Amino acid sequence: MATETSDAVEPDAFLPSLTECPICYAFYDNVFKTPLRLPCSHTFCMECLSRLCLFLKQSQNFPCPLCRTSAQIPPGGVPKMQPNVDIVSRFPPAMQKLQEVWVDGHKLCWMKADDPEIGNGSLVTLHLLPGGAGGQDSSVSVPQSLCRSFCRSIWGLGLSVLTVGLLVFTIVFIPVYVNSQ
Image 1 (tube, rainbow, N blue to C red):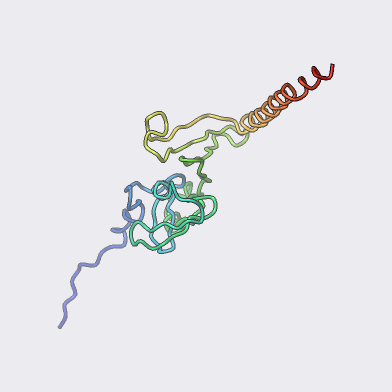
Image 2 (image 1 turned 135 degrees about the horizontal axis):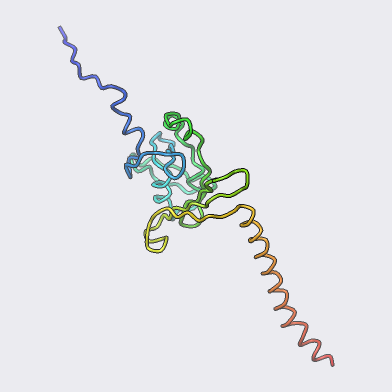
């Protein structure tokens, strides 16, 4: 006669392990700590996987930190990996929309929209290397208008083209003009 023991574990007992990254033990969110699922079904936050794959190229393979199964970095980097929708569905409703994050060199970037009507926002960056932001490894918010940053980049490009044109004119055409007279 077998006796049943009451050692059954409640499903909610596993909830903390499902809502935190097994590398950094931070709770998942919908920005830099987005839960990303590897092909082996293990899940890690975007920040930890980005740090792990920092010096790897797109379409290059890396081993899962838990089981060593090979996973591939998609075009666009680690932020383009598939999120674990099972975990995201447990987020509060306001956090269930994942934010667009991209890799820029050795940092993760996210445009935080403060006021979508007028286009103001903040560029939030997370440096993946220690000491990346003036000796500290933390998020840095830089206020910036989307329109103003776009115009600045066009003006900067126009100014660069004008400078190079003047330089070429000075080096090539002025000596030719002086020698012809």
